[in-house]
Image 1 (cartoon, rainbow, N blue to C red):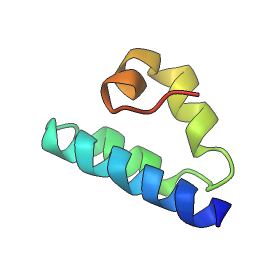
Image 2 (cartoon, rainbow, N blue to C red):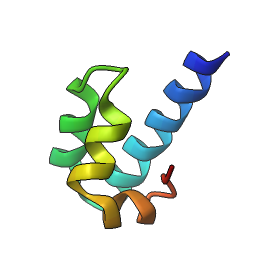
Image 3 (cartoon, helix red, strand yellow):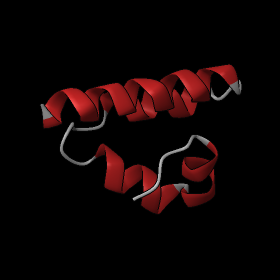
Image 4 (tube, helix red, strand yellow):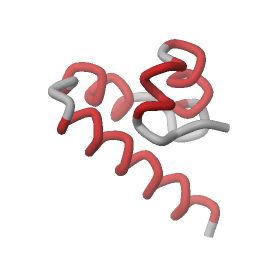
Length: 56
């Protein structure tokens, strides 16, 4: 169940980024390893992550 939750969170973030016109960042997140995309996104773009509704 955790993998499904993480997958759906990732899809939501990708969708939000695409809506914001940030396709290149969305593609970057898409290719990141499933077990590291969250921490890498938060450490690289913490403000953007919050705008996407993603925070830990």
